[in-house]
Amino acid sequence: MTITSQLLQDAVDALYRLPGIGRKTALRLALHLLRQPAEATEQLTGALARLRKEARFCSRCHNLADTDLCGICQNRARDASLICVVETIRDVMAIEFTQQYTGTYHVLGGVISPLDGIGPDDLNVESLLVRCASGAIREVIMALNPTLEGDTTVFYLSRRLEGLPVKITTIARGIAIGSELEYTDDVTLARSIAGRLPYQPQQEP
Image 1 (spheres, helix red, strand yellow):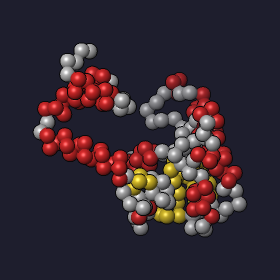
Image 2 (spheres, rainbow, N blue to C red):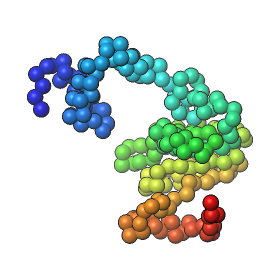
Image 3 (cartoon, rainbow, N blue to C red):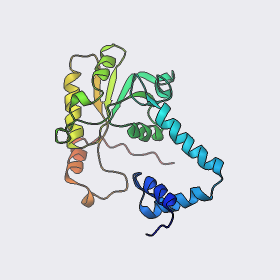
Image 4 (tube, helix red, strand yellow):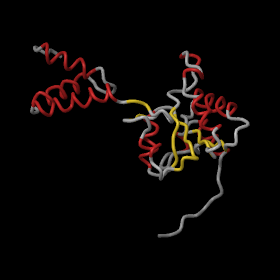
């Protein structure tokens, strides 16, 4: 790909560094921004600059926030006695998108991974223990990815939470709706069988 303008090349290189953006897409975006009114481009760059400079993390759950507490922790309609432990902020957004969860969150900031040099001290573990030791938490839902690192982290957290008056649960794991058994991996299929539930026929509409 030959770009005769160094200014355009610099813009493409910057956009190309973003995840999921190839060089052709980066070029298309750069040319699109070039065709927009200057105000629109300045609004975009200004929003990104403010996000980078002013965004902070919730002092309670470590979710992305505009103030000391995020909007979820400030929402009195949420069940503050229920904590869903997740790996990243993106997991919070994924669960919120379902509109099925009304409790609060705790973002660990990763999972225990010795191969990557990530231990418990690198995660937001102590603040979770403090929240659970307060006596105001009745249940902790472990919603980490079903990987070796995720399971290791869940095991570690459950050991650290022993003795505290909280119920520890994990999200259900099984076969996705619409998938076929022959294409399901062995671990998922085994867990689906081990965690089977009583059959409940759906009512006809």
